[in-house]
Structures are given as structure tokens and as C-alpha cells.
Length: 373
Image (cartoon, rainbow, N blue to C red; front, side, top):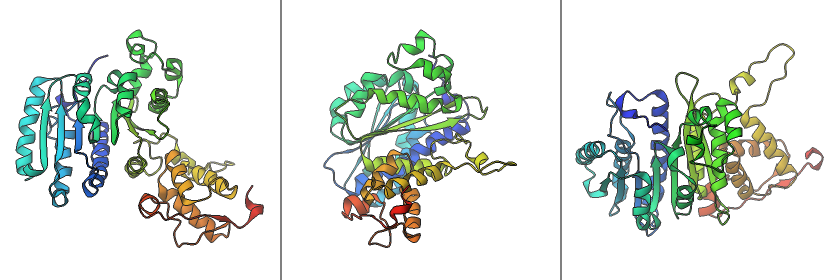
């Protein structure tokens, strides 16, 4: 499988979308660990770090990390961020190290960042730094070669780490195109390559994400893999990120970032479900429901049938369906207004902080039994 050097030409729209998602997630992830003392170091890993800028001077992941740290300088106090940058190319990592040292001084965050660089393989880095990874609050970004590098043993190593979220990149259309080749199959012999080969090309990244779920160990009950598909400007190639977390707060934050990136479907930078067409009626056609409307319709049925009985139930269900709490809150408030349910609060409190930090549990009472079905 060939490796493409994204730093040798201008970042395309898809690459910038990918970097934006990572930056915005980091921007919401970091303050959680700054404000609360977990008794572990805060660690960020950019493990295919590149050389800092594209040829037009657009920042890559590592320099974006430093800018995000700068935003929280005033609340870091005596805490420091351990930033690990790795790239197998010696010249790139040396150039990046010099750039980052200069940037750290420019941003005046010398007292808040411990910078570590290395130029070894991705796999070697993980196992060499196993102890550090096991004892840290970690965000790991693998921006290239995810299909080749995130094999079953690596995936299981990462998902078994405590207090760790990770994102990795997949060239999804490439995998679909060469799904019959031994060169591709050898990295993931457990995958269903027939399904990968013949699925809708727009949904190839989602299908590959589903295959990675096979690698989740049986002892891990709470987790979520979230794909975000990115279509290249040629409209023919789809690739994307896969986000993995065992922590409900991390899942909440990533979904918020994804839906902010695309408020129509929340899992792609293009109209993957043809949502825009659903709002355009032709002669003698019924208007099709959007992704959000289908979710809200199913949510209402589950509440009226007393499957989901509280804000805790609804919150967890919402995240598992790949939606943000705002979608559920809107529907539940409408149900109360229409006299279908009652709850003793102005808001249904479909919110992590209210539920898990303030322990505000709200139970829903079904009022109109005849409307359940």
C-alpha cells in the first residue's frame, strides 16, 4: 500500500476538514482534563506528525495543538501538557521539532508544554511508550495509514488503555478499490472484504468502521466507534476519520464536533444520506423523513412505550444512535407541550453535566396511553 505525502502539495479541502475536526475535538477535550485533577499527566500524541505546514503555509496537526494549548494557558496553572510528536522520516521530525520550539516561544507557553519528538515507526512508538500510555490522560491522533497500521493487535492495545481517546485515518475508497487483493487483505484477515467491495461507495467509510468493531475485546462493554466520512473534491473518493472512546463524555464531545461540521447528517462532509433531496418534493411524492426526524420519531415511540424512562436512558440512547443531546431535548420538550408526557422540570436535562456531575435524574410519565402506538 503506497504512502502519500500530504505535505508536498497544498492541503485539499478534505485534509483541512480532517484537521479541523481534530482541532475542534482537542479544543473541547483539553479543558476537561485541565479543570479536573485525574492524578495523571495530560498527554497528546501526533504520531504521523509530518513537517508542520503544507507548501502554502497551512498548519498541520502539531501546530494546531500548540494553538489550542495557548487558549487554555490562563487556567493551566501548574499543569503541563506532554506533547509527543513522531514521524518515521528523520528530516521531517527535525524540521517539525525546530518549528514547534519556535512556536512554543512565540505563543509564550514554554512553562506549559513538555515537547518530545521521535522518528520511529508507529507500532514501535506505541510499544516503546507503553508505560507512559498506560499512565496518562491521552488523546492519540494517527493521521495517516490507519488501515495498515491499526491492525487487530494495535487496535486492542489502544482500546484497552484507560482514559484514552484515539482518532485514526482511513483511505476508504482505496480499500474498496483493492478489496480483492492480498496486499490489502493481509492487514485485516477477519474483515468481510466482499461487503467492503460491493457496498455503496459513499458509505464505504462507515462499512469499514463497522468491521473495526470486530476487534473490540469482549471485556469492554462501554465504547463507541464513530466514523466521519470525507469526500475529496473530485467527488469520487471517500476517506475519513474513525474516533474511538470508552468514555461517554468523549463520545458526547466528538458527536457535537461532527454535527457542528455538518448539521444535516453529523457523519460526513457531504450529503451521504441524500438529506437535501428529502426536502424537495416531486409530483405525487411524499416528503421523506430526514435523519434527525427518523431519530426523533423512534425516540418518541420508545418513550411512549416506556422503554426509555428517564433523562439518563434518553441521553445514552441518543449517543448510541450517533446524535447529539439537542436533538433529543427538542423532541421531548415537544412531547411535553403536546401533553404526551410529563416531567417535573423546565428542561428534560439531556446533558452530561446535569446527569453525571449534578446527579439530576428526571423520570418521564406517559400521559396519553392511546398515543403510544
